[in-house]
Length: 211
Image (cartoon, rainbow, N blue to C red):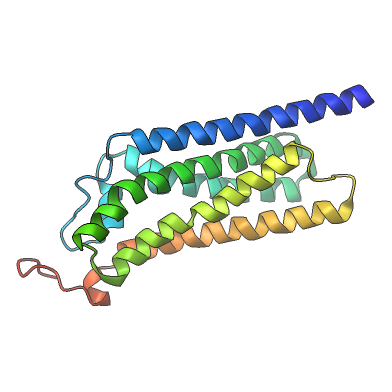
């Protein structure tokens, strides 16, 4: 029994370590990668929308669709497991995988956008009013809840959460649900503000741009 428990803990620690290394490697690659935000200046649209429209399908998957699919997949698959206990044999591992991927993917996207787009727009004064910086700000803000999803999963697989304690398990699940809801809300808010015509929120575009 003790041998089985030790083996489980070692596998959990190995998974946690692999996740940390994966996140570090992905973040480093995002910082060193060629600028994927260049050319995101669509006339009359937010830079968020321009960012998604160029370098497809990479930008669409990296900055919006990928994080959205992971978060919504976690929610849907988790609900299947909650209502169909027999399905937990496959829903559990998929939810865990989604949690482990969420943080590193979003962190790499945010670092790339921050380094290549946010600094450039701020230095040159090219922001297109509130809709523009709110959309990009919400994109960057998604990093916090998605990193928390990964952190909670790492704690679970590394044995930090005592699954034999019902209260500890419930507390862990509540935190996971709260951060998952926050991630979903931020993703959809970023989409909404990203699709807004920035002139509706006070931006005055160049004279040659017409509504």
